[in-house]
Image 1 (cartoon, rainbow, N blue to C red):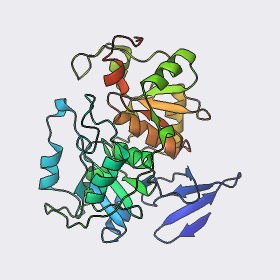
Image 2: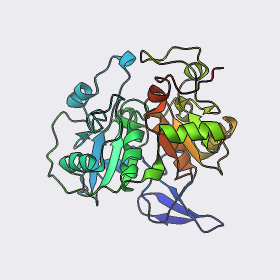
Image 3: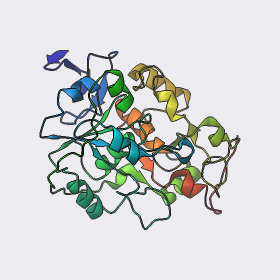
Length: 316
């Protein structure tokens, strides 16, 4: 074990890969990562010490379901982490697609994040006020477009508030930057990929929706969708990954147990899905913490699959 400045540790595995531990302020966790990767999670103390780092840009990626009756933009305007910019997942998206917040074209993404003052050398920190909805989605999106300098604030805005750290209602000054996007298709699954996976059972499919929605005993929040799940898929409700007290991710050991209990073999590839690709990204982040850096997200998710009449559905 090697101690670095700022209270972080690197631990070397027997196979030579490096494990990253982001902070001493929480229970010890080991995160397998490539040698040059940025940490998938940072804690509020780390961010508080780096708010004025010119290489760091903070984005508020808060997103709420309609039933929550909350307005992310309004809440951001009232109080956000100082210097943060609002990342609207419904605006930085393919707005020509009838499905919600689908991935945009690479050029459009590059233009929009460049306007936020994000360049290819920027370390992006995404947070939200709703249990990783949609900071994990933004983390995944940046990775899809070739940007690994991205982390999620563990515990989000709630943890920031609980620590008594400052908030602001002022709009952050920003300088537009050039961002070059490099699309990684291996991190995205589409309808045909899932048809094949469901038919051949070639890839593990993990659904982040609630057990009732997965089983088909609870209605979908969006009208016009069938109830149930993709044949052969497994279920792990995304909320189970989050500690109810700290609102941070659970320990690596606890996460591994949750995935295994859901029937997931951590040595095999996984595609995650949910309602619209938001909470599926939380499962992808959890898998990244366990060393599965290749997890793909089904972008259309159940809104696409359950909204069609030519896709098979299982219940129970």
